[in-house]
Structures are given as C-alpha cells and as structure tokens.
Image (spheres, rainbow, N blue to C red):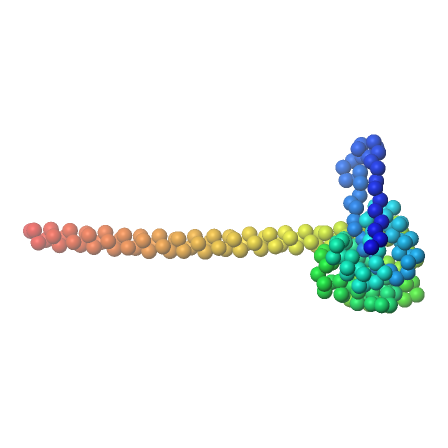
Length: 207
C-alpha cells in the first residue's frame, strides 16, 4: 500500500505566525486510480501540499486499505474498469469503512455527463482532469470542512436530543412525585377529618 507522507520541519518564523496560520490540518487522502503514472504524480504532489496520501489501483484494494488506514477524503477516478468509480464509491459506503470521509470523483473534460452521474450517485464533489493541483487542494479542503461542519451539527443534534430525553424523564419523575405528594396530602386531610369527627362524637357522648 504506497503511502506518501511528508515531514515538515518547523522554522522559527512558524512560531511567530498567528494561531491557525502555522500549519494547515494534515488530511488523509485515499487516491484510487488505475494509471500508475497518474497515481504516483498526483500522490507526490498532494504530499507536497501537506496531505498523507495512500494509493490504490482499484476498488477492492481500496477497501483493504481502508481497513487499516481510515481516510478523510477518498479521491476516485471515474475511469476505473475493474469496478467502476461509482460502484467503488457505493461499495465503500456500504462497507461502513468510509466513516465521515468525503468522496471526490475525478472526471474527464471530454465526459461532462460523468460529473452529473457522479453527483447524482452521492459524490460530494468532482474535479476535471487535467486539473490544477492548487485548485484541487482548495476544493478538497473545502469539502472536508463542509463534511466536518455537518458532522459537528449531527453530534450537537444528538447531544440535544439526549438532553431533551433526560429532561423528559426528569419531568416524568417529578410529575409522579407530585402526584404521590398530592395523594399523601389527601390521605392526611382525610385522617385529620376522621380524627376531628371522632373527637366531636366523643364530646357529644360525654355531654
């Protein structure tokens, strides 16, 4: 499983840079492309742009790769032949190995319909080759940020639902306790009334 990693040496000026501008988040990319030359070139270029890149030549190898190495972004060439790009994406999603990764499909400039097909099939974005690596970098990070925000919203909603559920249980318990207190009060009032009646009866008998 070829992986491109790039160790970045920190320079003194990095320490003086404003927070958030020192080092960009290092994302994990899985690139699936049957062309070995394209895999190597794009993998190295993405590594230089501060990505950890794993390479796979088809969807089956990609699945095995994801078992050991999760990815933040899965970049798939639509021209795969053993298992089509869309079939590869669907298989990865169905496997549960993708997690919150975003899928970006690589399409050909000569096949604009493929981009529409990829998006309709559930891809988060597509890029047209040959592509500018700086533009690809911007789009990958944009999609990852979008997916992260959606995941954060989902987590916040889940936490809110859990808090509402706990509050509902607490309110239910409070209502039960209130009803029990009302029942106790009613029994106490009845006991006092019965005692009062008994006192009055005894007083009348004594007279």
